[in-house]
Image (cartoon, rainbow, N blue to C red):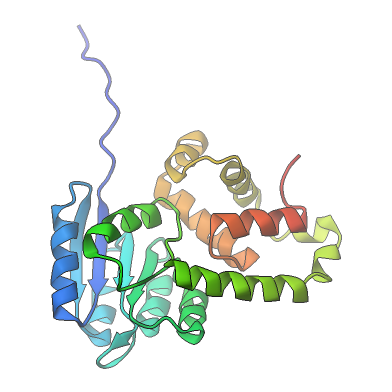
Length: 232
């Protein structure tokens, strides 16, 4: 009698940490290693060490500080986007000013947390990031929304362009993913519906965010509606 089919176990989330504060790095490393659905695959304390880690197989999530002793964590973000395009990047830092926030997001970060978040709470944020979310500290989210409103008002004229011109910016697959996102499907559900790996779906989501110049699902849906990209 054949054994019943069981769903395959989900792959663990592979995490890399680039952080110079030894106490915070060790605390974060411990909670990641203790999480049953995560694997800590690399740890670095400097910009140079972080860049060396990128020569290894890609991780799913990179946690990076900005104020590293030998340079900026933004350099690590940019290099990660190029070398690990499917990796989701989250900044963990003490810098909460608009300049650092916007530069990090423009470089490719999908999340931005201040270090007032406890390492234990950050485990849930890592899961959210790996599933396509954009964890952002509340005070940072307010800055991003303020900048987004500014950009929306200045680009209102562009929203009047013909729908055909806007629609051509996304591929057929990207439009399909965008439709599923709008309907509330999770990254794993979209992957199952499209018969793709969730890493491939996450790459589609990152490309959609880049083309729409947004950093979250809510912004993507708003921008897509404005541009007439969503199907009826």
